[in-house]
Length: 105
Image 1: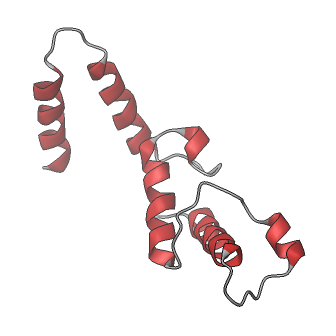
Image 2: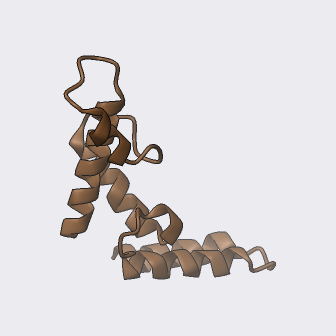
């Protein structure tokens, strides 16, 4: 589920993309100055911006999540995968496969 703040961020990112285009532009310079300059998808489709916001929240990295609250399960999975990846025994693939099967069933 995407929180309301996520929808709002996706709309802001969509507007930022549209305002950055050279075609006839409905945005004023003041509006352009208030919008984010980077990190959003270069797409005119709202769906792309929703996916971007959602995946960044699920990824569990706060600096990439547009200052939105991270998804707790996604953050937990990222931390688990990071710990498994640090294991020098070489069993990472099997461990992650088992965890994935558990999560998906």
